[in-house]
Image (cartoon, rainbow, N blue to C red; front, side):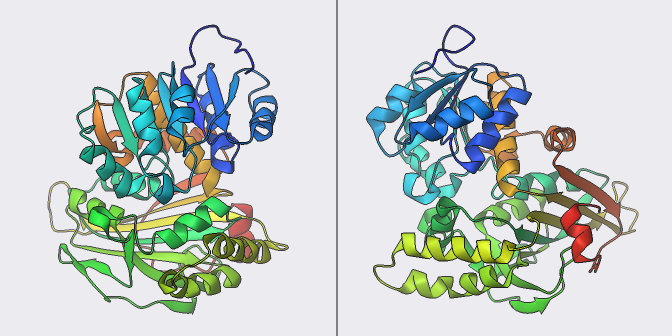
Length: 397
């Protein structure tokens, strides 16, 4: 362990600190004024690099195995907040959360989703006097926070939402594993994380309402792209919370190699004894191939329609576009914002999803101030845009 520059117990214990999300979260925490940080991961060398390169040597490091309750208890002890950036999410579930709550810490997870939430509730920990927050990342996380912000920008009642989300960026082994696991788990009550081709129609789920497409055009994405309609459990909660009549959600794949692998995913999930490591390696290689000679980017495009506050009958149409070079960086930032809010006593006790307790206006403000991303709101409903691959990749929206 390396002594912290500030004496006393750490304010935030960061599990999974050596990964792309964890190192981004460490940087964001420091920018948010958190000086006392404990960094943890299984491989201590990676944590040492983050301590030196990201935190200028100011902090603590400790080896921790996120699958070992004894190791987790030792790591979490003394922390005011535990921020989990480790995975795979659907294998860890609520393991880290249980250890954090047991030592009296607030808990933030950049993922977690329904299985972790349900696990904590089943253990009787839903009524804890600490804040336990899941889905504090990009997707899940901003995927519900940004539409809530958009709904608050002059709508009396939002009625429809169309989302196009995806990008061309590296695919970590952890993310790849979660992708295939999400085909069978990750949603509420033991269901899959979501349903391909489904949509939200008339305030209810409608299976096979939409079609997947190749060589398609998506607003603000460099075309052609692959698109898969997908209705996740998070999107269903969002639709219910905002009272939306209709939601169309499209996962967008600008890279042909990743799109091809994603089309094979259902087959992998059905095969008994599927080697998750091999599937992850396939996705990792596909993402690397799509990136050859190209600049990484990630886009979230939300188009919303609804009625004005005075219900005058005139339809309001607005679009929000977020563009970043890395969804991993955004996830680290959102996790750090939630951890900072917990430190400040700004989160209610108990079990929550981040979109229900983080102020969307504050999140949007922090994204704009953090740099590295552009976030633009426009009036009018954007049905499509061909603005050129070079424009998107260089970030001039």
